[in-house]
Image: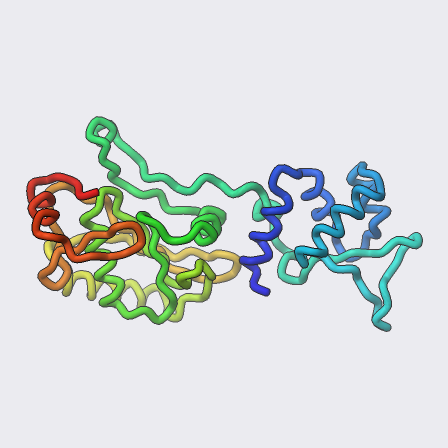
Length: 261
């Protein structure tokens, strides 16, 4: 089982249940259920119920000795966390944070124009991956060619909010490692953007470490209502999670400085 799935399960059963999360924190492979109940100030039956829920989600398991028998202390079973969860901070299991929202300046507020995108932190990346692609976020698995990415950039550049491309994340939100060094990826991607998109557009590429996996974020700024960006001589737009060639009327709308919804 992947770490991302375990974190998602933990969030489900800990949401709105801080005492249960406390029970999980007390599991360390040395404490018995009785000691966990005592330290968490819960009844033994309540602590056992919490531990059973965690067992069902595969977050914890009863610990066994070298002979394969259940390890007990004070006639009570000792529990340990799933190996992938042992060293994670409890912050990973708190309620999902609010997804990052683009910032607005005073002019943007008046015109309802979003001008910049906040770089998501590690927990926000997990939330985004769990929620899936949308108008603002696109996932690209490791190995996606630079031209495909450039086309996505061109479409994002003509939209109201711009967007973020997550390189190293599969379509279903599963996080994998990027397959190249950041410097190589940056050079390859920037060269492709420069060679295929006109007029020139500036994008930012940042590296993020998420649950021990390296991914790259390509941040495309919101449309400036002046330039109409073309990818290989064609205007593209992003609608939802898809990229479409702009219709003649949509292209005219962009050239008139009007946002295409």
